[in-house]
Length: 74
Image (cartoon, rainbow, N blue to C red):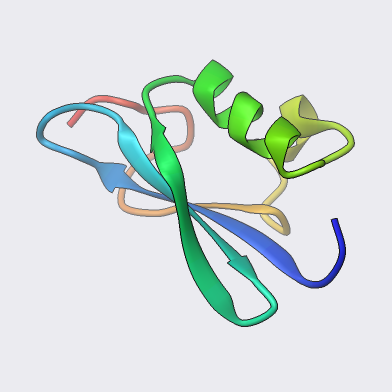
């Protein structure tokens, strides 16, 4: 993945799931709404991340905002 990339998993939504945005080269891009770790791994794979399963717990890559990591319900 060229350039600086950081994934933000936003707080759980009332309707379920969490918005996922990626900051790449200074811009935030909405990549989708994840409802599980699997959904998030799929997003990271599409971005070209080499080991997306391990990245979920790497604070240098994924920022879990507004709720505990791996928590998907409001």
